[in-house]
Length: 195
Image (cartoon, rainbow, N blue to C red; front, side, top):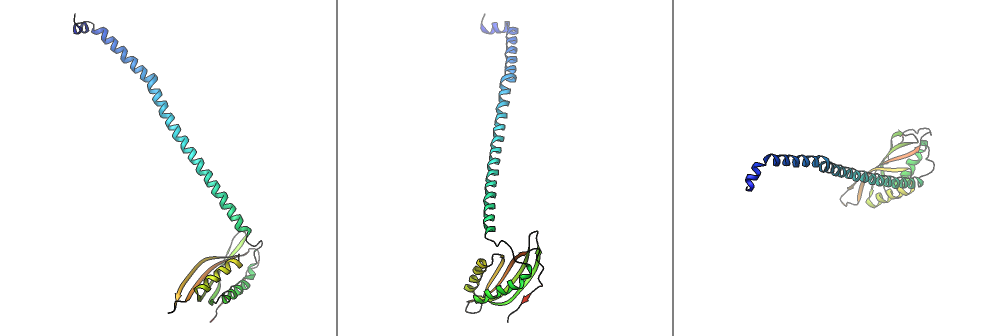
């Protein structure tokens, strides 16, 4: 009996063996291979989730560090401010001081006036507008002086335009925010014009 006759004669045995191998293969896949593949996939997903959480923790730690630096910087800046803001009723005095400082640096004032008062929980912010002419150097020296001498003033905008044929004179408009004590009596609007 040759091999093909033997296989044909014992086909039921071979079919049963093949079926058994197929069943064992399916059971092996279902019982061993598939769970391991699913576990490997789940492990990969958990690892990815872990990496994302670690990155979020790192970002949160960095944001906290930056917030602490910002808080320290603000605290340092606040330490340089006057302990007590002046009363709003001192607005005319502040306007006169601004006018004197402008004169000191050769800036001719065309307009110096109070803007709106904006109340806040701990202070009042008063807008002040200064419009004038002077040399570029005089204007920059004035701004530097105001920054050093008046910590309760904040410059909100500056516009400088060169004027004249010699291009030495500059027109300037400076918008300030003046911070004053909230509970002090309000000042009457003031305006100065110089010709």
